Image (tube, rainbow, N blue to C red; front, side):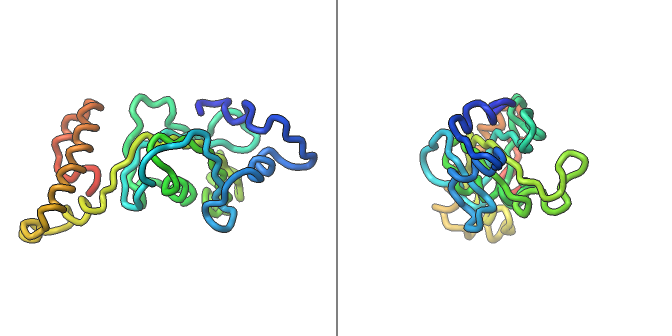
Length: 199
């Protein structure tokens, strides 16, 4: 995932004259978008539930252009990757769809067609227009924040009326995030209520 993993043994034995690396790779990938715009190849299986739509995720990723060995974007070498909220912090639609197909601990390779990545304009000067990109994504962990989001959006009076079981679920989610932030030495963030899930 750090740089040259893309070309190391990915297509050994594939001999298809006239096809690009990504075209050959795409032939053995699973279509998760329904229109072949987001393709997936699981490198390492994960465990547990799939990522929930309202989750905050902890991921490591590297993004590649077809003819480059080094990633154009990566958080793989950062000491502590940041938590990202689905629907808010992730800018590529393909990455959102990819994450929703993953389980904790899973490592997968994705191809994102332009309409699921950087579109018809690209992202000059780095990403040319209409470019398919490859991302390797490792889902380290996630927490489902749906109940926390609902709870934090309520007034104090409405929170008092929230069902006890749901309050306990919110408290457990917030505790898990607080513990994660504490382990990252982000003490101020760890003590703030509804910090990660509710923004």
